[in-house]
Length: 329
Image (cartoon, rainbow, N blue to C red):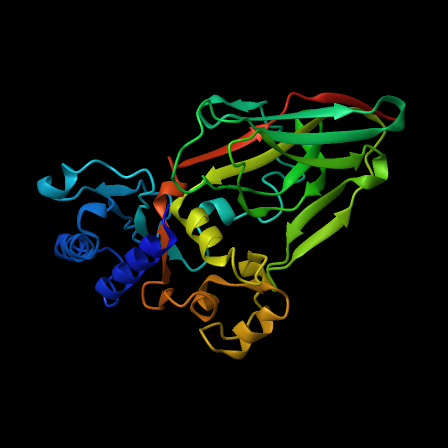
């Protein structure tokens, strides 16, 4: 991928779509394509325009060039400039900041592999030590893509859950969520460790007033349990756009629960400035960090530009390992 070409593409998209609504019209798409075709000539790349209407899970619509431009051979370094419209509270993949399971939930069924995404999860124990290791692996591709942006996926919090009588009895978070994960053509793993002691598990709930997470220590009762590792892994226009937009900034993540109730969060506000000191931002504050980001308060979205060649296909899967057996005495 050529960085100058990508920068020019994104700048062109920004200028052409500056005043557009949440979904670009066909005329606007054609205008962007014409603009890029004139600026790039034979080096033009496909433009992907993603109109989500406030919901990130929609499938990206890829718009091809005119017959003349499309007949040119595709360049190996061609980027795919794209637009993502992101809900200010985030897509459904970001709803649970700390894992997908909590106390009282029905026990999950094992789903340890996602072959199409080359993903798998397992959990192992260290014998008498009483330690467990949870690991999710992203296997290397059969062929490494040449000249395209490195694919990006996002991993939620990795948790170890204890189940008894078909119900989740406690959880341990072993690994925080990641804004973006890349493998650069090699197999890669995320790993977390936890002690399988009765007093190490807890239950997580959300305070309805503050929106903050509450951790309630929860000693497991004596008995036999099944122990699973679980993680949600996904790739969407939102996740790729967030990662690409923030990877060169000082922000570690985007987390709506970092906001305080009753505080205004708009670009330049005191609320947004306060988050900067925590190296965290909210979606409504993104224009402070990303010059081309556009906030639309009326629609409740923020528009981000990104290179869609880092999103070979969208997916959203929750991996659950085969269980270990644990005895609490």
